[in-house]
Image 1 (cartoon, helix red, strand yellow):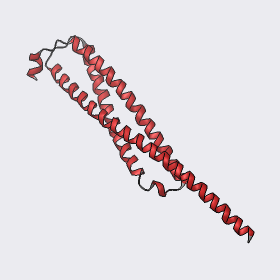
Image 2: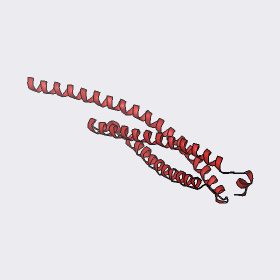
Image 3: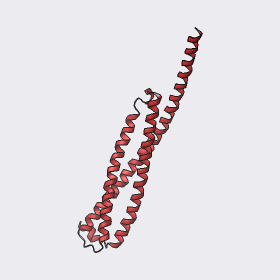
Image 4: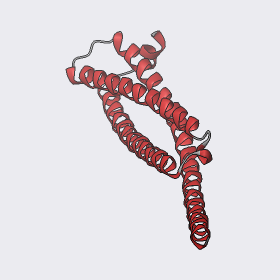
Length: 166
């Protein structure tokens, strides 16, 4: 009988420990969810900035089509910018998918085992790191492209007439 009571006491202690561990994991999840919301907001803003930049690039490319370009580096830079913008579009689409998948992970989180919760938290953390790193890289590339674009515009005599004709 003593052994049986001892066994139940051990199970109760272990159950309490598991509950504390799951509560700690739930707290980590809440923290990651706040971080996710912040990342999603940055992502939405970045998509807007990217769309504006892509539109400006398209307009500039159309303006260049009607002009005689003597400096071939201009066309090389414009083509490079086009490739970067397309790569960014693909990254942003993959980020949309990751953000949507993260939303799906919220469902039933508290009902999972502690091991499953840890695995999900690790995956979420890894995804957040990837999103933040790729956003930082794209922002840096946007800044570089803006500076290069200004240098290109300085080389090309774009007049109001040339802009209005396209």
